[in-house]
Length: 429
Image (tube, rainbow, N blue to C red):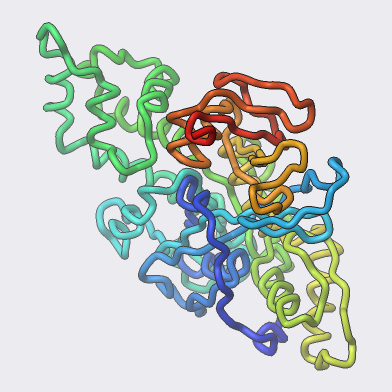
């Protein structure tokens, strides 16, 4: 669609370091040949292999994407100089972790294709971006077919089912042993939550999620021997919804057949987050931006050419196509929105700014608003202290709201855009 993309420089860019990156991870999933790796490249500016055939991605690729939010420095009337993130004209870009895994085909949970490897690569993901071919031009195996001839809704269904079957397979083998341990009749029986957590270790699943999944199915948590095979499948469905929520990135939205298909997907899957995407267009814009040919921040609805004399005719033609077929139609490429929604909507993230000097909004080196942390809705001031440093959490005394100068306690529930100083005995000492 955008032939000029190859004429823009493709290179690897240094990743900004942040200890936030290992806390929340979003996996990019989908069948082969739908543009997963292009989406990943567009979000991270890494150069993983991209080709027009199935299973281009064999090993998982890990890289930094960014959450785009409005920085608080304008509201506070200060000029910031971030350390763990970037601020461009009031837009704060906060690094997050993305992983691109091998394509999934029907039967993957039974080992077909690269199935078992694909699924194991998703263990640590907290949320999933499911990239689909919204043009309907690839079949279930990822082979090219006539545009509009394949229904992407079937892909959404089979990918979700394969992940559920994979979760179920982790429990099936020892299900009898698990149920006996729960209903042993001993003085200290094992709780089902603890028994399942042991089997699902390393999957970013906690006991609360397991308990909620059981509650939503209406099954008896203290009588797992009464569960049949269908019950266990239903439980795994609910657990997937809770522990690894999925967003649909409807890629190739610039194709002629895509608009009607995306409308139908949004109507039929009204309970899902569905975002139109043009990953190839985003990759072109980001490469052009890094080559200093255009002014563009990920997620912008427009771009501006910096110097027309430096752009070739092929590059101009490609940029014009992006403008007319993507930005004018969809008001963005959708890639940044998908990453934002994964962290801020699916994972209920908020952004908080820890500082060391609450009067200057700075760290001890004088950097203004140096740090932007992605926390969960419901997290507390003490949770923030632990995220900044374990010692601060262990020796937490109180926090100071930099806006009001007031002290808040350990159980203070964080709000989006809070600016807080953590006070602890470790700091005092």
